[in-house]
Amino acid sequence: MKASLFRQFGDENVLEFEEVSTPEVKRGHVLIKVLAAGVNRLEHYIREGTVLTDIPLPHVLGSDASGEVAAVGEGVMGFEIGERVIPMPGYPLEEADQDFTPMPAAPSYAIAGIFSWGSYAQYMSVPAKWVVKDKTGIDPAAIATLPMVLITAVRAVKKVGEVKKGDRVLVHAGAAGTGSMNIQVAHALGARVATTVQGEEKARFARDLKAELVIDVENDDFVAKVKEWTDGEGVDVVFDNLGGDVLQESLNAVRKQGIVVAMGFVAGVETKFHVREFFFSHKQIRGTLMGDIDDLKWGLEQVASGRIKPLLDRALPLTEANVAHGLLAANATAGNLVLLPW
Image (tube, rainbow, N blue to C red; front, side):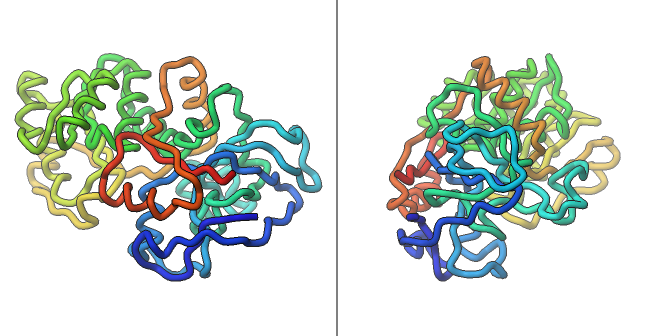
């Protein structure tokens, strides 16, 4: 099969398109013909070597995929050849951790495309337990934009942020993959949404998602705008996928006893905040990463019903994985990128 891989850490140009061995169909696994592979920011960091470097090289990235069943391993039942499926973008590797709650906190939990070869290839092998049937009827390229951002957003917004109908929430980076999905999940739960963006083009994108308040941080102070929007009170929940110095401002934007959901570090991995103001106001910071199979299933139900829509920026051939990573690094997308292996 063909795959995009890298043999050393570096910029997007270390990605190469080559012939590699097709994965074996192991017992309990499903061999998936990848129809489209999603591209996520985490993969950019892995390729750079800024997240971890103890992975065997050469390496094939990719946690998100939309595909069809090509073969099933011994002991696998309930799947038919040619059936459309979606693999979980992460799952526990050890049998003892299969029912761990929350699943992403399991000791052996791993994101696909990190410690095993991922979806930037024509085929991938996934344990059948972590393969979901795709009943949406939506184009594979659009579906491939969903798994990681969808389960991450569902868990962050619905479970960790505890968002409910009527809540006012602030979503950072509303034109990015994670941010745009956070907006949609919050809307699906009946919340009112404010969001931050950079530039008018991304502001238009966020307005199309029906964000009630769109704040261009190139021109406005988002804390001041949020306080004005909430009559000085602050929002119920902030979804902070930026980290760095932004976290303190997120705390400033949330109401007393409100929640800041920390779920990214685009603005930096280190932060400082005023602890006195933090605990006197009874505010909470909650961390979250990814989600479980029930989050994916709930999210796909919303997709099938039209309440959540895949946000495909563009689809590129797998031969241009380096181009996709360059666009991602430059923040030159509105929505998600996918790669087409065929």
